[in-house]
Length: 129
Image 1 (tube, rainbow, N blue to C red):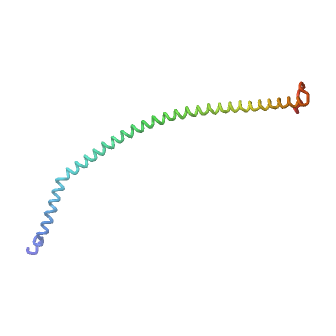
Image 2: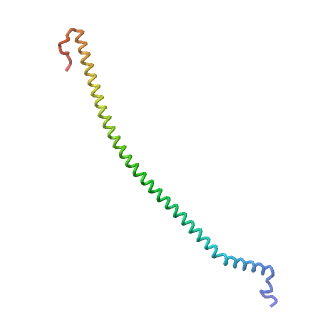
């Protein structure tokens, strides 16, 4: 047995195996603490995510309310715009009518001046109509 397996193991090999055994024991002893820390971190992350979700839900609700109020305001503005366009069209009609009336008044005045120049003040003007 002088050439056996145990005769080939050196003190360095014993040291390496001993160190490996210590590391294995340390990992086995610390493993529950590592798992607990991971679970705690996960629970903490879940709590943070839950708070963020609550904040986001509140923000979505606030924004939804704001969108609804803006839609109401937009509808009111559209109605006011339609009313304003109607008033503008009506005023443009009055303006066109006033322009026609001014043109007609100018025509009458110029016809009367023409008649005065020719001495026919009381006679109706001769128009091409």
